[in-house]
Length: 341
Ligand code: NAD
Image (cartoon, rainbow, N blue to C red):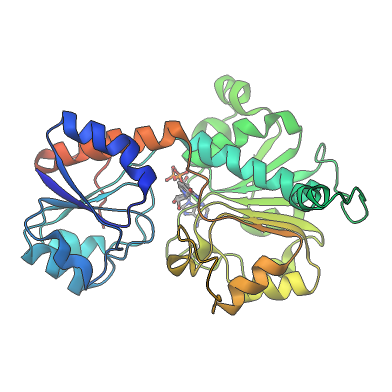
């Protein structure tokens, strides 16, 4: 079996190379991202393996993959908003993903962003590197007793609930499909997540939360859920954390909110126009994306390059499941890893 791996970096080889060798799978490591032009690189490959910023949303890309003999799109990630799954299905190409690799990795990172923007660790780090030991402007708030709103209570949202337990915050939850054990307040759920959790409607969560953290997928329903209207409902001095997908936030509206001092802090691991920049070293270039420059310039914003997943454990698990998906692609019907339209 031969698989074309798009948008690869040196760290992708660490686990994939030895595991593929063991399984007798040949990998063609490509640095290019998948799009309608680069689809041709997959000629004679059984499958392509793509990551979050590859683009398989165009029917033409899918058509070219099909013409080149590709039978599967293997997503080495959980999200699949960058694939036209319906077009792939119609072309007879199966889409398989890694639904869960290390929810804790993302949740721990989201907590890191929250603590860092609140206590301004990013600014303190830069100051002391310059022997500036002033703490003016670095005041945060105690989180104990404050309210955190968690949007999306799937695998990562639940992991977030576990990691924030020690903060002793009041927790508001929103999910159109609530996690039943939490809703039912089962003893197991209380043991795992604590007592202080309530599902509420989205408006209540926006209005009452001191911290809002996003853990839902990017869909037509969730796109731009953080916009000028929802921002207007939020408390002044709210902290917003997004480790899910950039498209959940309307960046223009976020920038307006930042300009109006609405936010005490914003921690972003994702950005709606990240494809062109994230995972790449652009330090020698002038950045032409004015929104990205403005976001980066706000002192109360930490923006990182989609690295919440990036732990040893998660990378190993991604490699294992992706290659299992490859081995099972002809008999994947009914597998929870299959992505359906
Ligand atoms: P999941 O499918 O287990 O959970 C998603 C939850 O969101 C579900 O409970 C679902 O009901 C809920 N949801 C759906 N529509 C919603 C809406 N309109 N409002 C609120 N909640 C809604 O997924 P997960 O594994 O927890 O991952 C969540 C997201 O995190 C992924 O879709 C992906 O975009 C992102 N992610 C980011 C990274 C990173 O490195 N930054 C890594 C992995 C995943």
